[in-house]
Image (cartoon, rainbow, N blue to C red; front, side):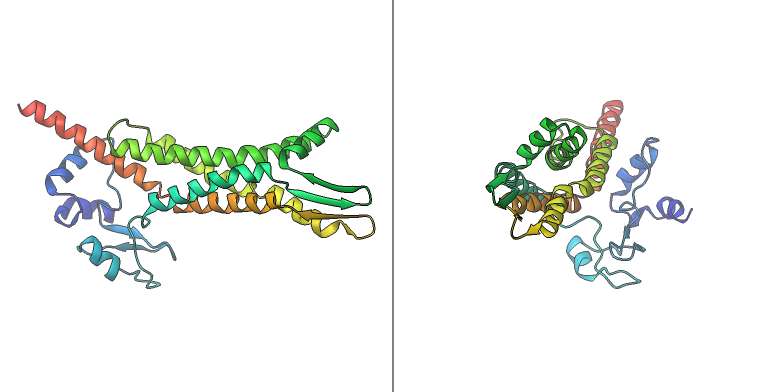
Length: 257
């Protein structure tokens, strides 16, 4: 209730000009955003703070949380650049993570190196279809799906900003939630290798060591997690608002003429 009253009675404190704010309010499909009401959420303690009427540089230097005194940011700093950097690094390491050996087994019978895919094929041929499917989904499909979705999200933001195409922000938000949900299942293979390396250390019979593929795979998981954390999904809605406002302006100009 307080937010609505502030938005209606004090349009001069909003980020947009009064002319654009009136158009924004007149659109029934759009509701005022926190940034339009000069409100921002503290990323540390979750307190809702009111930003002062300062420039972007002054806000970054002076605006702090009223509860925990942490710096306030309306959007994550350099979100797209950091997400793209992590995504490129993860995509590069995804290849050696699947090509290089994940485990190295040394026994009295010799030395054997296994990649993720060779493990999937081994369990499938042995009849352990469930184990084979879990390894394939958790170690190959999920990391690849995260890379594809993050690339699609970055492309969606770029296309919306360049006004080449308008993708549904709701669908993009759903894709981002999918990335956050499946991210926790990407480390299954690394955990299995760590458990095997710790449990199967019978020096006289066999020893299991983590290969270079496990290091690369762990790096892929960490980098994709950092990429999803760096991405700010609110940017999708920002571009959507701008595109809707520009379309509304064009309709008004055409009506006036």
